[in-house]
Picture 1: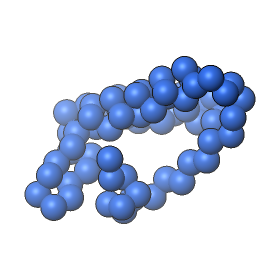
Picture 2 (picture 1 turned 60 degrees about the vertical axis):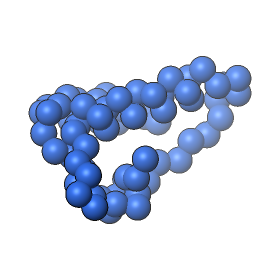
Picture 3 (picture 1 turned 45 degrees about the vertical axis):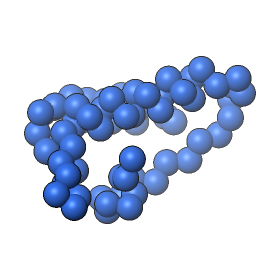
Picture 4 (picture 1 turned 180 degrees about the vertical axis):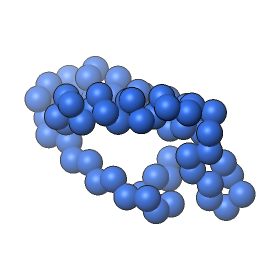
Length: 68
């Protein structure tokens, strides 16, 4: 991922960490939860034994795309 895009995503996630980010089927997740998921994915990719592998990102605001 472009470093500038990654930095911008982290900035947006940190704006209001306790605010609702995802509400789906009576379950609410905060921006801090989303941030924790993002950081976990980042650690998994960085720790991967295949450095330099390509990763795609599709950002949509629909429940199936943000489900974890």
